[in-house]
Image (cartoon, rainbow, N blue to C red; front, side):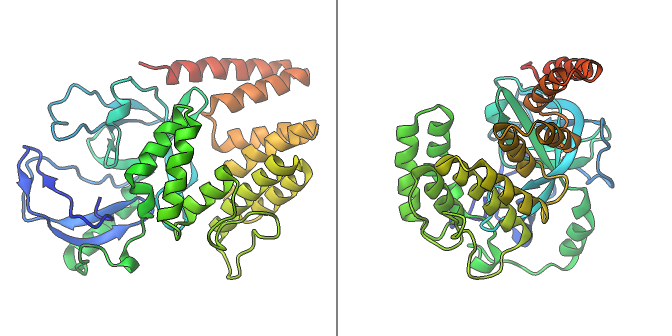
Length: 359
């Protein structure tokens, strides 16, 4: 909220407005700011000393406007079903980040209340994570959380002697791509989700004109509007995918996935796309599944049956909760006459369907 020029209004848990405080620090990967207020809350959360274990049950608190302590929106409760690497969503520069995947379905009334600042606690009432994002995978909504426990020592250090950061944030202190906070971006996402591609295109074109320096918006405009990018940071073809200056590992992975998709969408060049993705895997964290998901799709198109099955297994090793991938591997194992493995995966599908069904 502090990434925008206007100063946000802050409320205490009893609804009273609190004078804006002093910004002491910013944690880009978690999209969290540390602010000191001249106020003593009646309720607070201690930070958990360690990250929740696999299978440990946690509660994800859905915030609702100003009355969340009195609302009837229940927490989303479920086990930590996976831990892996993801990529930040709203930053001007991409970063790899660690996420926890919470195994649970959502009530209809919970979904609109899960926004920035929603957080998760463990059985001891300690803060363990905050919202990273809700990722739609077919009919399944994956709840991804950023663990917060590693920040405890840094928060203590900044609280004791952090430098004051002014607001509005200086450009050097603002890690957020503000184009992604624009109301037109929300309208674009809503139109795209609802399948209204005409309206989505209008909003995206407007965003691309107003934010020529937003690498994310320009990349989307290139990919979805099929037009040249506004900067060298966005790749158009295999040759144009190499910016003049060195790029980080995470940028290389992002550009490679986009480039591979472009080769397939433009020329049906699955062989070239596979080659590009294999290069990306050399610099990609082993627990980041997106390149492997794309690689599995392309290997299947090429008829590389063994490679397709291997990719699916590698995806499930780091993302065991994605139902669509379990279904694909179950079908592959059955076709290979691996009936015992196929049955285990069938049982897993039923287990995940129960876990993720709408409450």
